[in-house]
Each structure stands twice: as structure tokens, then as C-alpha cells.
Amino acid sequence: MIKSRISLRMKYHPLRIRLLWLTTYIFMSTTLSAAQPPKELAKVIDHFMNLESTSVNINQVIDWRFSDKSDTVRIQMDIRGERNFHVMLADFGMEIFVTENEMITLNHIRKQVLFENATPDALLKQLFVGGDLNEARFKGEKKLTDGRRRLNFQFSGDFSDWESLAMVLDQADSLEKLVLVDYDGNKYIISLTYLASYEGFIMPIIDQDYLHYQVADLRGK
Image (cartoon, rainbow, N blue to C red; front, side):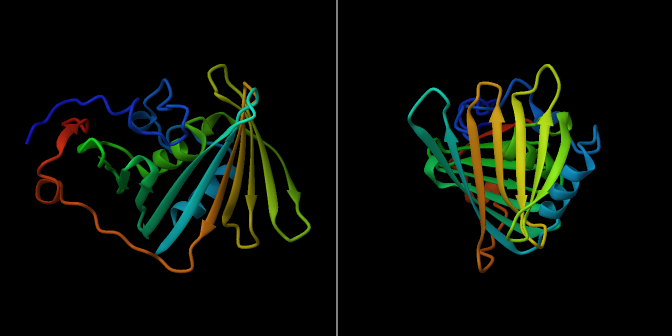
């Protein structure tokens, strides 16, 4: 098996279509314990991360400010419990598996595997907000007519990509929708649909299941 430092980070992780892995490698360096986001936001993250036996479809529509076109990213996330996640990006031929301290990315189109030191909260930050959660500032809550709640945040900091974030929670405090606006005025609308039944997943055994894949190991020793 060939082990090399394949350049996967910028080219093959289209979680937000903008070819984002951002300028900081947040999977390696950012966790919730390092610098706390506001408690209102941390509570939503904890609720989502502690779900068990849950599958959810995530649909992200990017409404470009200076274009009449929009882009869509479709993701399925399976949550096994104990902070074990499986993320499927079928449109890009990619799967991501996350345990408490490790992330495995499979690029089936290029037949490549990437191992990284990462935590589930880092995955959620990148998936939903791009690593700027610690720059968020809570600006208030609005109760909607159907019993849902909308939490509003603004971002501070010279290096934040984002201007504002709104999160819609259902009556059970489950995350239903996020609306992000960046400093260019582009809008990211992320909708979550919880599936009726859990689809489940099995962690891959790379040296048995993917012997023909090229491997890059960035975990460090």
C-alpha cells in the first residue's frame, strides 16, 4: 500500500462547494474546548452531536448574490451514537467517517483515503459554519408561530468568513435549518430532514476493504 501526503484537503472536500477547506486547517486545530462559542450555540451543537441512531438528509442551497444561479449540495449524515458519524456526499463520490478522535475520508472516484486527527465537533463546524463558531455572538431569539424557535447570531473577528447566522429549532430543540450570510452577501440555506429510520453504517477496515486505494496519513505520531 502506498502511503503519501496526497493533496486532498483543498481539492476533494466540497462540503460547501466554494472549494472550502478555508485558510486554517480547523480539523487539526479547533475543538469546542479550546475557545467556547456562545452557550446558546454550544447547546444546539451538543444536542445534535449526542443524537443516537439517527439519519438525516442535509440539503444546502447557495444563493449567490451577484448571480441568478444557485448551487446545491446534498449530504446524508448517519449518527450511530457516542459521537460516531458517517457522512455521504454521493454527488462527489465521497464518504467521511468520524469517531471520537479520528476522521477517515474515502474518495471513491479517485480511489484515495485520507486519515486525519479530528473530532466530531470539528466536522460539524466545517460542515455547517466553516470553523468560525467561536466568533459568533448571540443576538436574540424569536419564537415562530408554529412553536419553533429562531436563534440569531452575528460574527465578529477580522478573519471571519461570515456576517450572520440564523438557526431554526423545532419544538424538541432539534436543528431544522441554518441560514448563513457571508461578507460578500452570498446566502447559504441548509435544511435538515430527519429520516424515519436509522440507516446505520460500519466503520471501514481500510487495509482489508480498500487495498487498491492510495492512502495519505496525516494523523501524526
